[in-house]
Length: 328
Image 1 (spheres, helix red, strand yellow):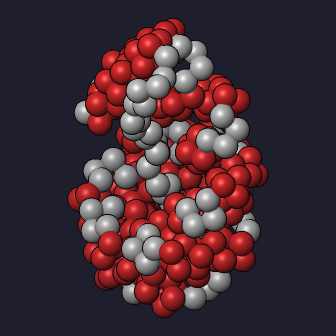
Image 2 (cartoon, helix red, strand yellow):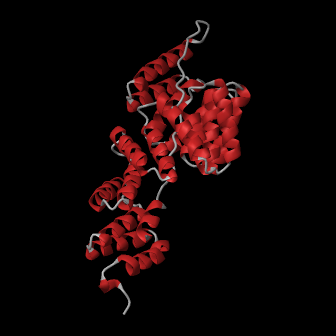
Image 3 (tube, helix red, strand yellow):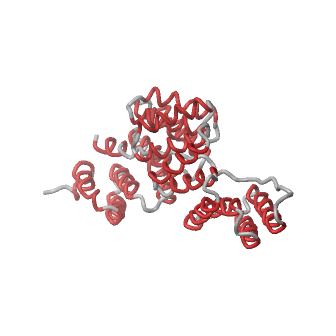
């Protein structure tokens, strides 16, 4: 069946990075009054960061920097807050400045690595995590995040080695179990992947990504019932998880539950309105529902976003659509 085969191709990857490292300070009495004042602003900024008050924290770190521009912690922590606010360029500039002031500032390398990973600059992220490990060879979070970046780059052997190193230091690393599960899935070992995702879920039962990734592994095995349950659980934990709606819609389409499939694609499009593949998939469902005009609208939107899907659309029309789409 063309529609099932095409829908199942939409299964994607999802991974997560660990949180950023906030630096709290112990003020030494021997420091200059100006530095002491700057550090007091940093401490207040830290308290505001813990409450999620990003703008106020950024303002406090700015006061610290204005008082004494030689305090690297102020730049590092402002970089964290700026990244949380979506100012990636500002965050990168702050991490760079922190490292410039203190070339052995481990947490600034780690935080810059997380930022670069978020920007899909995987080689640079790996270099930063490696520098952090040079400064602290037992920093489990740096191994885990380097594994995540190596996985994203396609270096599955390197990712697996880093996951194993992480777990030797910290058996309860959610990220290491999750990434190792993704690697095993790529290696066509769904049972091994499921074992790791089970561990990740046991460690972090509120993380939607673990259920989503385990659902993908179950789907790979053909266990649609368990896959459906995991996608549903992921959505319950994170109602804005577009990929989980897409993959659950895939399953509903494969099971012939077309109304449920369309509802999931509707939600996915609302969350990710520039996903050509989702418009394509909803168009397929609408063809099967006999709603040719609405299917054509979806296919037109799909092509506006990605012309490479045109052959798939033409094949779908010939295979599934009512007679008006078929060649005479």
